[in-house]
Length: 201
Length: 213
Ligand SMILES: Nc1nc2c(ncn2[C@@H]2O[C@H](COP(=O)(O)OP(=O)(O)OP(=O)(O)O)[C@@H](O)[C@H]2O)c(=O)[nH]1
Ligand SMILES: [Mg+2]
Image (cartoon, rainbow over all chains, first blue to last red; front, side):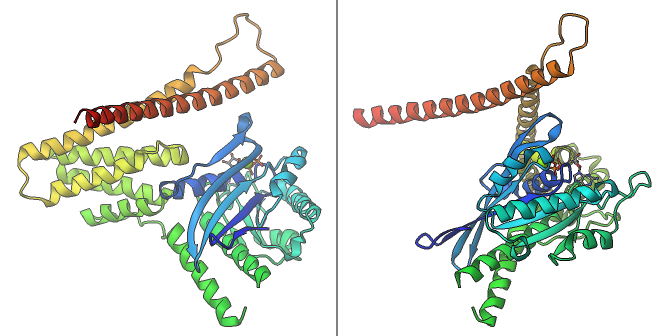
């Protein structure tokens, strides 16, 4: 649950990017960081193995400014997508307020996407959170891939596989090019703040 | 929360997010016409949000102006600097040097002065461009030094002929990565300590002069 300091009029929200390994979570944060770095005080922290896989997490904190008198401090995290790092994923998800699920549009990733979403459901349940009632935004990433050698799933299939029950907002994106990366983060931040507000009321 | 309060909250959030992240602009069209206004809006967009599209715009607009200043080496130099900075930032993205954007702003503002202020004499114009060139060179040096540190830390090839095994390789890599990280931390700390020492020195000097008077 968000850290809310009524006296200081400050709210801290934690948003975690999850999804299958190599799906583009870190690339999302890198793009965001490059777009806002000149306006924020903080740095992005990445802990990677060689070959650019996230080993522990990426972390990008920033001060969003004031909404209705409350200063909103946002923290973006990514988890490692590789199946074997579930303990780390669970740990990073502790205290999460909103989730971006980055799905990989490549056809070969179809099963991995589904498994990863199921893993998210379990990990949230571990903290007594119901994924179906939780702020979440789906991102269908790598839409820029359109060479005949790399078939990609159409959006209807992704929707059917991942969003039939969730009915969450979703974006087609290319984290590499930056398409809809900002739209995704804006959506999850606003969903998260609204949900926090509803819990308070 | 009643409905109107809800709508108000939603629109407040939206406004804040738009302000923070900037409105997303459509990618610029390929037809670039020649005016400083276009370059200016490219520079302003970068101050607002650093995207590939803005940077490409910056590069294109600088390039488009170049032929107009073929006979004015001072302005020509500034435009080339802008183009180089744009290319560098576009390539390095989040990893580009923290001062690179500041350089873009500064070079553009000098360019604007040079073009718009007709009162400047040749000496003043030269001084302006000399300052920019010097700062640009300094940035370049810093960037090259950053790279030099990284390469210096890359492991030397093994002495014997045989290829290292996968395990040896990954151990080496991990070890070197850790060393690099430690080195970066150490460098940063020692820079900070240096800075603090300098501050203490100036404070002590100030104290001395106060005591003397
Ligand atoms: N074509 C294309 N490639 C992408 C896109 N997003 C990410 N990639 C590439 O996919 C690879 C993996 O991206 P990452 O951002 O490191 O993936 P990740 O989800 O953080 O992976 P883990 O840390 O292992 O969980 C990199 O080579 C990226 O350049 C995209 O939108 N389009
Ligand atoms: Mg990653």
